Length: 439
Ligand SMILES: Nc1ncnc2c1ncn2[C@@H]1O[C@H](COP(=O)(O)OP(=O)(O)OP(=O)(O)O)[C@@H](O)[C@H]1O
Ligand SMILES: [Mg+2]
Image (cartoon, rainbow, N blue to C red; front, side, top):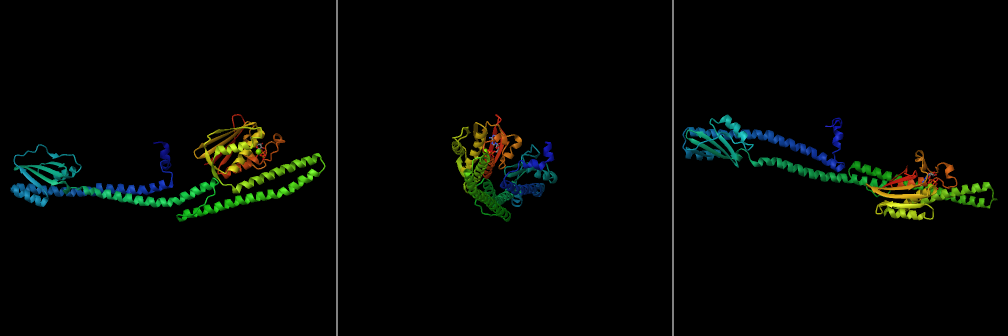
């Protein structure tokens, strides 16, 4: 036994426990049933049966002693046989020529010990005992010959006695079946709730009805309230974003127009580029907010979506190759997902010349990696670049024209699928974006 087992016996046991609620409740149901069955069998065989067999054997041996006494008294053989048959269920014969070669008990049946004990204690003669088939044979040497007594085994023990155990086992089994059927019905609503929560987490629009026992129903209702709140929250956020962006467009357009009519100077050019940047930001927000609320999640072949995104940037100098399993499917919000990939590829194009997209699937997760040969992002900055408007080292980005929204939008999209987006470094020192989406 390892030290672990001694220190944490329950934790050790836990490893062998079933993982599902149904499995565990089956164990909870089964354990007491088995314990009861074991105790019952023990009580029945060890105590009850023992006592009964003792007293039955005592009775049989008493009757045998009586037969011997009658033989002693010289009773006629015929008369004795009739009497013993009638009163004791014994078949008695006396063979004047007979001989007994062996004494004691023939020990091949567990029942012999009860007879042997009583014969040793109560019979005033030597004997040979054998329980054979359904008959108990006893041979007793006597001056008048060898007395053979045969009596049905069921005087001592009947097979039906076993049935008590069988019947308790059968009724325990019935109890178990009924209980597990009930249990399954109780667990179904929990499973439904878990499924609904999981789907909602992945970005599906789930319809759900609270049902089951009070606590489960409570959890279900709480889930629905939470789901509605989150949906409302997302909707409000998107609407606000769209509203603000939309409202900003008009004054921006006006400013652009006014600037165009102004006399050319370096200040005006600076202002023009600022206004242009603002316009792009606002447009970016607007485009993004259009997609969010509406798009349905649908199962698609991932490679197809990736190819579409790549085709969308083919006018750029970036060289993109797509590798991995082309047959993988995953539920996605296609347009948003393409936007996310496009944002990443635009970055690769801005900071590098080549990109590789790898598609993989491992236990229920779609993994997508986007690698490029740019300068990469230092480790301490990898979380920051996901913040809206955060741009790394402005000197490096001079003239690149970005606003710092690409990454945060990309991550938002992936989170909307219930997934994660993280950054790493690849072998060439470039950036590796790792996307994981449950599917
Ligand atoms: N592939 C990459 N290689 C190196 N640095 C990167 C890469 N992708 C992003 N970055 C860094 O992360 C910062 C944030 O990226 P993000 O896409 O959010 O903004 P942006 O590309 O500057 O602007 P936008 O995408 O809004 O036009 C960038 O400014 C850049 O410094
Ligand atoms: Mg970008």
